[in-house]
Image (cartoon, rainbow, N blue to C red; front, side):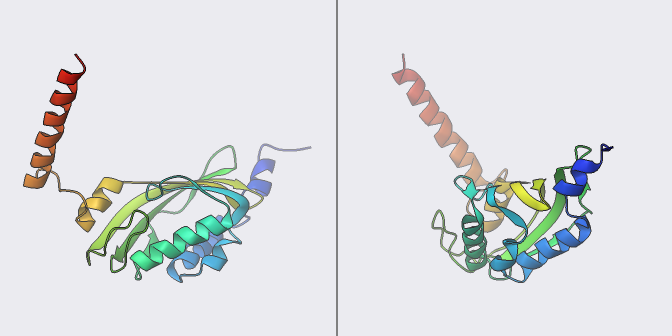
Amino acid sequence: MTTSSSPTSTALPSDLGAFCARYLAAWNDHDAGAMADLVTEDIVWEDPALPGAARGIAAVQAFMREAWVAFPDLRFDESDAPHRTAGGDQVAWRWRMRGTNTGPIDPPGFAPTGRGIEIEGVDLWTMRDGRIAVYRAFYDFNALAVQLGLAPGPGSRAQKAAVRLQRAGAAVKHRLSR
């Protein structure tokens, strides 16, 4: 007889807290190789910092290495314990990321700003055979860009100037479309 909890036993690792500790260690120890044991071969990794989904372990490891070049002191910590869904194969995990941008951000090719960041976010993981098969990160990418000095802060003169430029461009486009 199977129970409704049987999908959980195959989808999720037996100790989700230990799994998350290993995940944090992979990031914080700058050990991209350790991530290979935590994700499936066909992982689909979606992050606002990426132009498109990273597919496969090698692409995820390349993303990690690029993050460490841009933020050599990058650190994650756990804001809350992970939460699993009733269906048994999904995990929501809240985190905080900190670091200082002393290396180039590639892609898209931004020069180092020397500024620090502190961002909170949530990962949604779809698990398969005790590993992450689909990874989706959610965080305020605009707040990250503002902290880095790559986007104007809310209410700043630079933001007001950008709004004026956008409105002027929209007005020109509207007139040309008539």
